[in-house]
Image: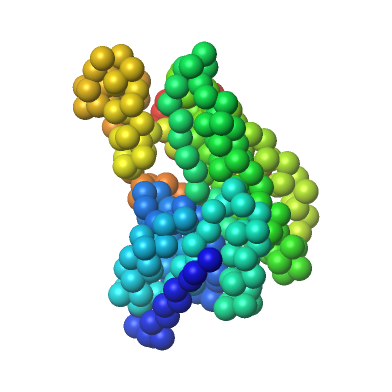
Length: 275
């Protein structure tokens, strides 16, 4: 693995909310989309952010964005499905900062296919990345949080893990497993000052989501734009969730004010899930 460290050393940081000063956050899948927005939001709120993804070039771009805003970031090329990579991520984080206060498990992958036509290796990959990736990261970081008797773990699941999704069985099953893992970990560490929650967005306006929509549309002889319009009619708000909205919820769950919230799967879906 290769890593790039950036640190502004500046005392004149500009951010909307200052309540994570002195804390260290690991954000996986931080090179784009939801993970990128979460990492930037955390940095603006005062946390030093460790950026993890397989795409080091994009990670470095996010790191430079953070540094230009007066923040601190460490970029580490990481494949969360590989336990050795995750152990190295934790090792580098502790060597640089000496602590881990927040872990955001955002790295993930999607697979669009009917059950009958699903390829076994791609279905299995949904669990290797979306479930084992979360498991590896929690297992690696949790000992440091237990020692500190403090910590916030936030797992990005999905409404697909709550309701299911046609032609998305591998992804849906994996995201449901993340919810189960979240609840189990929360119970294990509830007395130790550590919380563990899952955020379950509906469709978030990211490149990955639009690629999935294009794939779905092609299955039905449609185009991505028209297919997305039909999908949006399922939402009471008639719109997509934004990455910034997910970042704001992650930011709140990382705060002291969210100390009483743990073991929850929070649906951020514009009213799609009402029970």
